[in-house]
Image (cartoon, rainbow, N blue to C red; front, side, top):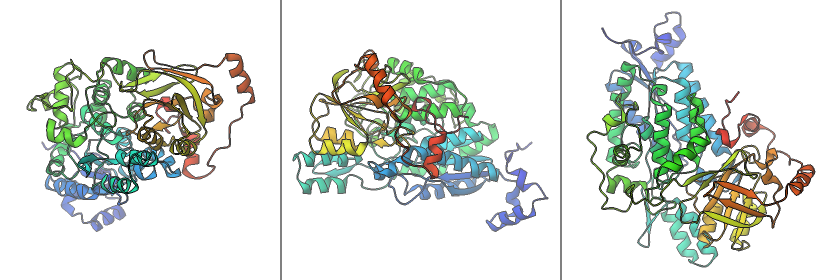
Length: 561
């Protein structure tokens, strides 16, 4: 007996009282014989204005051609995306994190409204990946994610380049370390074509984590955007979406606490972005799984840092593809060493261990991935810090190169723009703790991602000489002694709002504390005098976001009520 797999679409196609719906489906090109087939929503975050996303329509079309060959109906649609690289350092960056919610909401809306039986999602840039994952969990019907893939490296003067090279070049130009022409050549050659930013930044961090979590086919996270492997993945994904339909396997069967731990462990072992925490808090909430900041710290204490990958390291995702053999080789190594759990279900219909059976073992005649007994850092690079400055928690990204403790006087800025000007005009002295506040989920609004200040700091040669703390967040490309996600944020009356120039701040990533060294009586006096500044926006989507968003320590979700 043939298994019924059109469990949702039959609500429209088999209902004879919906003539207008049937007429419109015929208009799309469906034939009468298609009305008994399962329908797959094929959603991409395609748009032309960003290299991370500009090729996703081609991948989507290839996937649709493949879906049709498996006796399924495929309907392509798109959702939005925001380029973090283009909006970075501008007011447009306020929309980056909020776009995650719009992506999730729009996919949920189209798929649920049109009764699609399954979903294949094709994300590119940073917020695309958690946005589609949140939607797939809400809908909970057979689904697979096909990552758009990372960009090829750029080249100039015999050196590999990526997007962070262009930001750091500005700091080098402003300190006369390179000429204006060299600066221009670096910018022109940093991004040679389509694909997400090449280091272990947020997009590649999330893609790697979701592959280990089982929501992508093996190799999806590491196959470059223009590779033959990515084309082959698009051709074979239809085999697995049909298999998921027939087996009745849904995202909530795959996304469990164990599989989430797998994703986080892999990402931490590779030196992934701190945005991992915001997104996995939101993903866990969508899956109704209890996963908190304490879980991240526990994992970071257990998992060594073994990935020599940018921004803190040297290599790119293309090096994992070309010189390691792809992400499954690393996953298999961590499985064999007992770091990952192998019995978690995946989108192949098999367990993670089953998927790895024919994957070659890693060899260590390369410098990209270190063995666990000789790690770059004996525990994870992400530290969850608490203290009077962040009673709700804050996130530090410490690779070990920056040191583990920083003690210095505060240099306070109420906006990223003011901090950037100070750095570029050489107004920052060694030994200070730069404080950037009123840039949180509400104060930003949207908790704008910052790459400019950290890149300018590194480019100016201050990387080991200053620290930076904020109630905002950092790009996956950021590195240095940086602490973000400080909760409560300044706009909500968090202590970061009361910090003054010359106050001493101590950041201790050995004991996971962050402390404003000011007497309690003085703090209380400042608190009584403080008044929240006016909101920066008072209408439109960002105003709605302000009214709905949860704190950073809860993942900045908007469906919390």
